[in-house]
Image (cartoon, rainbow, N blue to C red; front, side, top):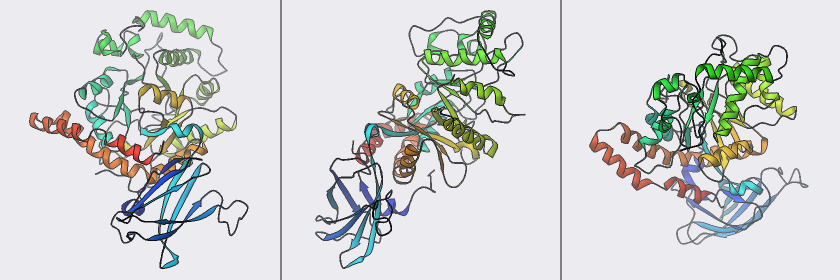
Length: 471
């Protein structure tokens, strides 16, 4: 079973505390019980506790800011606590339980997190906005990729194959008749055809667009999958007509003549990027600019071109973390992001695997990055809106310990969740992902068994979320 083993502390094995995410200024009932480890709380016994706010420091050293508060709580007949507490401000808190026979001996310490404002209405959903399958140059079929990444703990994913939108629709269709909690979002990686021999090789990801951008031109996608709307859109109308190559060349040439670009920035690729980003937005999708520091030869996108795209914010979100493990890739992209923030150019960010194989045993980069989106619900439009509104954090899992990229407030919160929420969440996801894979790859009897399993466990992740978030 895949687990983020570097994140799970022994506390989660020995104690259950819920809710762990609590709104500020609201009295909440806190539940705490032993899970059969060395420390077992005695029934009907009074214990001394201390609630410690991490941000203020130790009151003995910093009395002006330190915030440690004592309380007493009595266990019930089963040795479990339930006590009311009001947390004042957004931060992590320790709850420490002391031995009733020896008040100086701490028996347990568990963590909770208090949130303020709009975060009280948003849940964390983790997933990927850029990955490939046998629909282009990946190694597993679309439905299998989705199942594998559900096993790894993803709440949402997209199939973004090169030049093709239809594989993402195949993945959605594969699970049409069974209940799953993984949100499979339609998408594609956009590669526009040459214009008078010149290519725009800046890759673009269409996450959640309601129609294919690749299929707006009579190129690879149309030749492969056809012209029917059912293979190139989830909309039934309001989809632009397919252009011929000649019509596309004429349109891009005209756009290139209209735009103003700095010296050393090629106008034609710039115009093509702008058109694709704009078209993704028209389709209701998230226009993502991925991996400028990928080095298939020299840097994938020239520095001056990246500066132009960022200075003019032509895209919706920057893939600050992507699918390579050398430092010049994600390291330089992270530095660029913080440089842009320092200049006042705030931008939404995502992290994605850009995976071409979902078998982590053989693909080191198969779980190299991901994104946590803080959203009211795990639904395509809500996820897109939340990223655009800056409620996302990129997760770097290249090394043995995770790193986070994003705004400080969300990074602190995400760090807590990766240690205290996601390990238990991932165990539930693994079971659904295993049944999903059996459903799409098994023999008839195995498929029937998987369908029964998926029906039986459906809703568990939602109930888990509702248990641990006091919203």
